[in-house]
Length: 184
Image 1 (tube, one colour):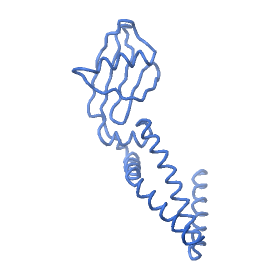
Image 2 (tube, one colour; image 1 turned 120 degrees about the vertical axis):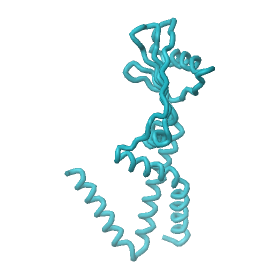
Image 3 (cartoon, rainbow, N blue to C red; image 1 turned 180 degrees about the vertical axis):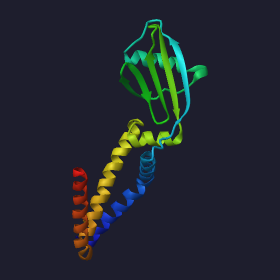
Image 4 (tube, rainbow, N blue to C red; image 1 turned 60 degrees about the horizontal axis):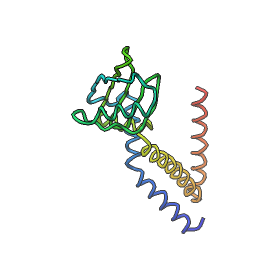
């Protein structure tokens, strides 16, 4: 490999590493804390019962309009943009909060539940990939960058004669230990 090409690989390796350092620290910190069952918490919870003159709805757009209208004014809370329907409950979420609208025994009344997350819980939600589209895209880019950084590090190392054999031994050892893990 020519010196200019090797320098380009080294620069790209370094710049990607520097750019993604903050999200790397988030993933490392939240991952390590999660191993020790430290997950953050909900800082506040609110529950409201909403009159539903038309009755309970399974339709996302109708539920969204009801929740959005209810949350303006005195109870102002921004409804998160990400949505999913699970086991008969409407959920909106992002890294800051969760909003859930569920049916009650009375078809004309729904239960609106709001949970606000603390910083650690918010970071863990980013780590798990539940923080919304922006963070999903950023995390995919981070994953690609991580793969590029590892591959570029290996490419650069294998080009150096004094490091080639130890590098190949390290690759083989890493692969062997990975396989051992699957058979334990």
